Image (cartoon, rainbow, N blue to C red; front, side):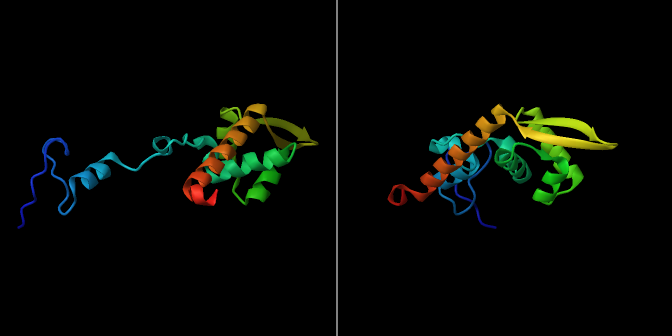
Length: 141
């Protein structure tokens, strides 16, 4: 059985050696975890909007004055339950407004983008554009 090289305690947690074959800085970086957007000068993305279905809902509502539950369900090709959960998260965040009514005896659920939701989407798009520019580097800007 091979012995692992001793690593200074300033680099590892007490009683934990660096992985075999790893340099001290590499081992320390691995323990520190991935670099987040904030660490490279980019604000974190809005996690409420960033999920695919929620981004689809808010984008569709930005392009339309209002959409019914069934319109969104067809547009996003998702299930009733999935759409309900994601729409509720956006509603709880104040990004969309839900209005329930009846057409004859049939219930109708309609959604609209709020001013807060519109601002959040604009901010999200600005963050994504800045991230793209950062990843492309100065030569491609």
